[in-house]
Image (cartoon, rainbow, N blue to C red):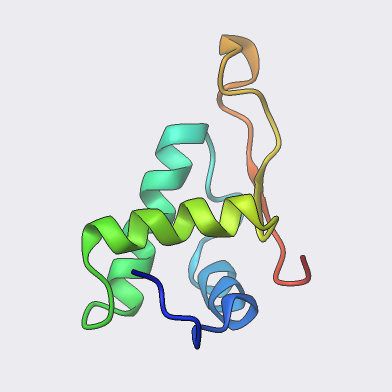
Amino acid sequence: MISDDLDLQQLTLELKSKLGPGEPVGYLRGKSLMRDMLLMMRSNHFSELEAEELIDTLEARGFVRFLGDPAERSVADAPWDISPHA
């Protein structure tokens, strides 16, 4: 369960600063990379499932946004926009 005290803006800012230029790319690869990065950043705070749910929450609230269409092969390798100002 994600704590109500968790600052999603700050977490998004930390996530963005840890990812390399142009990362993440691809819908599923991008979500996996962001999940793994959260686990590395805060290994004591989240389980793998919680980190995955947190990425879903960040996506639902507009902090991370896939710029392609995961259903369309031609744009499935599009980048993500990570914005702590959602």
